[in-house]
Image 1: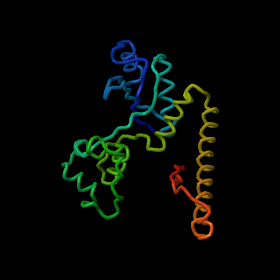
Image 2: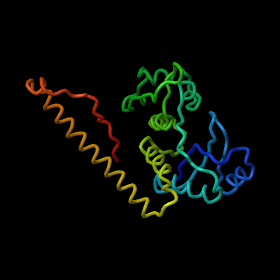
Image 3: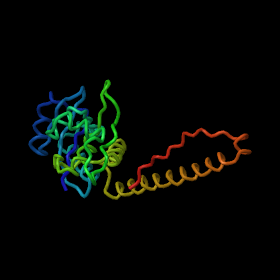
Image 4: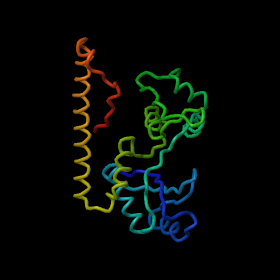
Length: 218
């Protein structure tokens, strides 16, 4: 399956004509600048998004050794951008966001990623996945939130330069760490509930109540 990626990069820019030409000719990739950073748009095939991203990173390194992929770019969109990409009105998007225009059997609109200025913004990959329910997505395959985290972590470790066996070992260890964290969190939550349920214990112990219960598992 082919996946589309937009990487934040360093080591080469649009001013490096040779790098731009090689990337376009050999990988059909586009190097450009946006939002104050250098970006690379590239599509690659793989068993999944992670596999495709690692193949893309290795190919980029082979053709332009000085170009370093730092992380995936977060494509954040506001109501206006969503309306433009979905080819609907801003009012339609506002109704989706507020739940005023919700169809039977369709999941709620994704939660916003945060705010830019005073306006809410969303991760486009999640909005696009939501639009797919309405047959209004753009048809492109992109990494989801968890895959983005894995790809960023792998790039930070330079995993794209290692063997396939090393990559598989890294993924197993990463998944094991997530499961271990999840189980430990559950134990801490259970302990906290026991402490809070005992009035005697409550007088002797205090709990922070800030345990992280959100662990991404696959």
